[in-house]
Length: 245
Image 1 (spheres, rainbow, N blue to C red):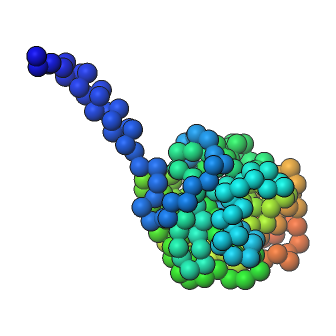
Image 2 (cartoon, rainbow, N blue to C red):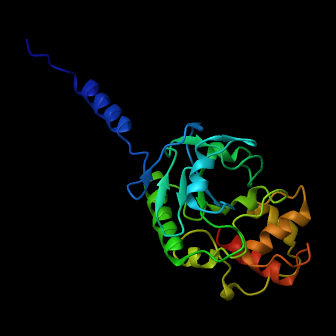
Image 3 (cartoon, rainbow, N blue to C red):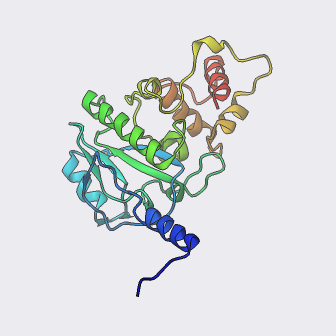
């Protein structure tokens, strides 16, 4: 006997099927699953460099337990531009560790983690950055992550992390539409502008002000050798960044 379904029941069935079929893997990346993950929904993307010798060593580290405990990331970008996906986008990878960005205190639960194959002491390869930009476009489109919500590992944990290094091309990423970069047209910060309040408003934790200033300088000035304070140029940069939020 032919069964007739109520239209609302049929609609609910179709919606559930659509949700179940949502793609949580990038079509751009090779799937090399890590067991180190659990479920959550991402709203921000955290960039790292691997600080290891090669991509195979990084793949091993991100897919096994080591002396520091289990670590993983959603993606690894090889120096040749090859993309590897280790954890599904809707699962929690263990990449960020302790830290804070703005009001987000559990970054692993809120983020996509992308490791970039680089030892931290040399520039990033052009093919690698091009692949990263394609991946960011894919992730922000599929997961509805705001394109301004791209941060460094050091941004959320400035007291213990320094990645990606000062060689990372943040301006190039911003010109491609990802993250933020100061605009010269915004001019200097107005009189009375407090750069420390602005740094905190932008997202940096100020538990260790010197470390926060160092992370900010690394990202927005490409320097590791500046004093751990905020000067007039830092105020100009922060003023412009906040105007774009």
